[in-house]
Length: 279
DNA sequence: AGCGGAACCTGTCGGC
DNA sequence: TGCCGACAGGTTCCGC
Image (tube, rainbow, N blue to C red; front, top):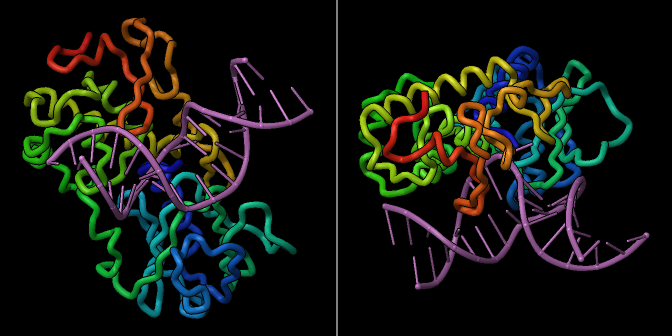
């Protein structure tokens, strides 16, 4: 479900509401997200801590707590955070309730139970965070860095951009959209890109992500904001999920292929490895 | 290094 | 109606 723009949307909404709130109690309905770590230890460690800030790193949500510790959350495919008034019983797919001193519940729900929650005292203790590469909206994501990093890889572009240890935050939807915007073939070899193509990739990556954040992310089926509203970027998708429909630029039917067991959508005419994109 | 496949889970949708 | 496979905004581990 959520990629960088969706997680950023959630992080901003949580940041607008949670700082200053204290977690009074944690109720666990299903503990898959803890990956086998002890439930009681998790509950007791969180109870009494205050929320200082909410932020994002790659596709991870970070809750900065006091006394110092961090709740590191990954929504995977169907995880959600929502703020709710008190409820008599959990709704379907509610997995954790974090009861706040305001009386509200911070609800973690997750249909498929693939999401993860980890509590650490310092961010460096999270193995998954340590693996992450450069955030594409940070100032470290420079054209020079991108050129050097791509030059080291023979992987297809789609695969390279999905690799969170290289660029952290892109997923299946936005990689398709970025490659279309940049006029690049998802099957092209990373190290074979020409300087002009890399510049285009760099530019379109940032442009699409920023635009998607302005539209509060993409809702195709599951994604919901903290207030249960949908994102709006789905109206701006050019190729994702549009197999068979005409390319918005050249009318060639959009093609769906499978790479790394995931669907890739692209225009076989506009997105050709070594050619310039159509005007 | 890269890639295919399976696993972790649950739900929906389309075809027969 | 019912069953079955394909597919879903993700990640990780294992073997070749």
